[in-house]
Image 1 (cartoon, protein in one colour):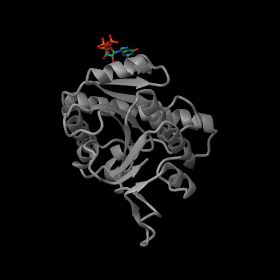
Image 2: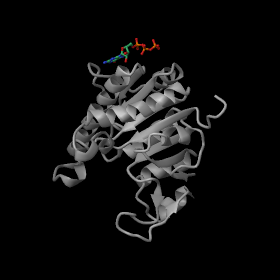
Image 3: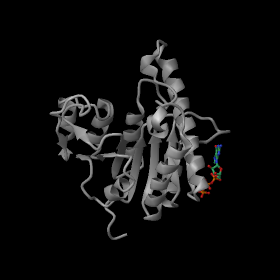
Image 4: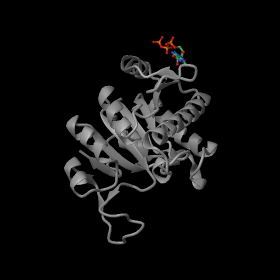
Length: 234
Ligand code: GTP
């Protein structure tokens, strides 16, 4: 693999990334497109883990409900998304394992770090469901935590926009895109890329993040080759 910069990556997808235009539920065509990209990574010999959000089913912040309960519903939503990804990947002949932070053994394996890394070594895509398994933590934080645990070299953050901007480019025409930015600047400028807990965890464990536009299928391969796409956070 001469032209691969990152051998083990963690792909962070938002729940909405699976929803397509309607922004709700699961759009099989969209899931298929994402899984084609994941498959191309696997075919390059890259070890791929995935953390997916649940916002296409449940937006806890916008619902008036006791926080812990609301977060558990969100965790179940991430597992539904994990199952959809697993199914679509296996349809394409990609071996996968779904591991959940909360035990639901009839549905998926429980999260066991050593098993997860073994699966990765065997070329299986490992999808992590239920976030961290704890309320008050986001799937961004789950991505950072799992990336640290499995020694991923980078977190690939798939977004609808093509990187990190100084302001929301949809609302502010003066917004400028950063090609590279430090963890500290993300935190001090309060840029809404991932939440602060996730960014801090990445900073403390030296995990780079690449924020890129998911809709461009070539991006993911370019990212693992170390080509400059989106924004590199380091
Ligand atoms: P190796 O033997 O190390 O290569 O891993 P393996 O995942 O193939 O072995 P294992 O016997 O653990 O798993 C066989 C199948 O059962 C895989 O599809 C696993 O995802 C699945 N599996 C293992 N443990 C559980 C569990 O607790 N719950 C569920 N639902 N499936 C499980």
